[in-house]
Amino acid sequence: MHSKPENAGVIGIPADVRMIPDVSRRARGPVVVIECFEEIPCDPCHDACRRGAIRPFDDICHLPEVDFDKCNGCGACIPVCPGLAVFVVDESWKEDRAIVRLPYEFVPLPGPGDIVTGLDRNGRKRCEARVIKVEKAKRHDRTPVVWIEVPKPLSMDVRHIRAGGKAVG
Amino acid sequence: MIGAGPAGLCATIAARDMGAHVTLVDSQDRPGGQLVKQTHKFFGSRGQFAGKRGIDIARLLAERIENDPLVEIMLDATVVGFYDDGALGIEKNDALTFLKPERVVCATGASERMLAFPNNDLPGVYGAGAVQTLMNVYGVRPGKAVLMVGAGNIGLIVSYQLMQAGVDVVAVVEAMPQVGGYDVHARKIQRAGVPILTSHTVKAVHGTQVVEGATIWSLDGSFRPIPGTERYFEVDTVCLAVGLTPLSDLLWQAGCKMAYVPELGGHVALRNEDYETSRPGLFVAGDLAGIEEASSAMIEGTIAGLSAAWSLGYSAADCELRLAAARAQLEALRRGPKREKVRSGIDELMQLGREAGIVA
Image (cartoon, rainbow over all chains, first blue to last red; front, side, top):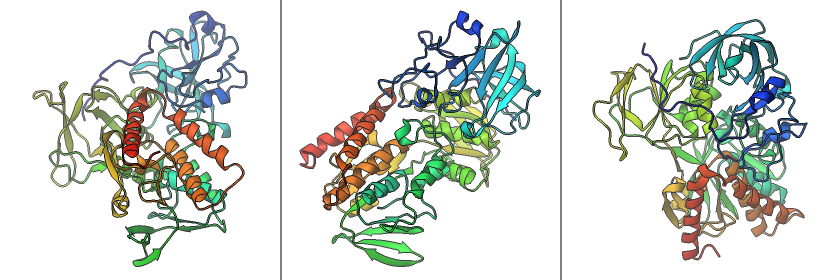
């Protein structure tokens, strides 16, 4: 077979966004990270938040605005995001490890205790990660949320996993 | 109602709610149009089923008109003629029948564009719609390794669905210097390891009986290929997602005044704000009225259905409120940077409509 080419541009987080929780907030416990940087007509994340942490949209095309003091990292907004752009990061989990919760719509679905490969926004392998929990209630509507444990310095880098089955990439 | 996709279903519901008798005709064996293969969750707001999957929206819409005494649904039936006297010729079970409705809402959707390159007729070269149908309607994988051509929303979404089906997406090539689809759709596949190569296109597909590989190359700022930049990929499938064009045959037959508006996908009918064309009593909605998305198609269908029934003298207490709400929702959906093209296309269409005396 062939090796895959690299992405043309490296994908990251735009520098000027205000919707990413800062280091001190992340250290305090679970908190949402919404990687939605383009104005598109969409607002289900606001509807899903029962704590009012994702503020009402004046215009449906506005980017989500989060009150990180109100957010308790419950993760109700993760599976409702049609763009699969919502994550929860918990850097208070362990001394050297953080939890990343991410939406995962692939089979096979890993289970607690499984070791999976943590990938960054460019699809590059960054670490081995242990699955802590898998949520797949009816309210997830076939978008399971996988909790993985990653080395703490990678909590803002790992955004996808590769789990069993056929390796892609 | 011609076409039971998102626009036609919503037009049917709206006209029925006003009290009109509706016959809904579709060439497929089930209602839903393209929704029946859209397994991803939709954007939008709650009013347009945001967060729901297309496959579920198709079911929810169809349920609203099932077993309704005002609605007759004709499936596996194709409208093949729009005659001068307003009669429609409908082909079903190899027989032609005729129907002469007082109003027609045409929501026939769009067809996929083709791309010219050597061997584009080899089995294994697919349109993205066919790939989606195979996978998501029939549960059949189109191949093992795919090169996706086009990074608009369809190319990005179908790439994601291919990966969900366990197919290797080798790369997405896009002729434009930037991704056309939504950033979040691009990120979904990029973090799963699929590279998006902008300013690239297909040079040729290789194979004798079927696709065995594909060569891509880079494009310069004027979209000219750059020799020496060729790269070969071993793939058995090349999937084309290079745009849609309105399926307007019936509108031409009906004698509607048409205009070529590239921002709306090609030839579209001049129409007023109620989506009525230059032929009185003939309305358009959805991709046929201009290529957009299912969310806007549903609202356009609602506007066309309400307006068509209203023009027949039907009314409902909430009719004007519904119409105003639909117009406001449509306006909101078309905001945002990625919809600028659509907005300018509609502006142009409306200007042409004013010049032709169709738009007040």
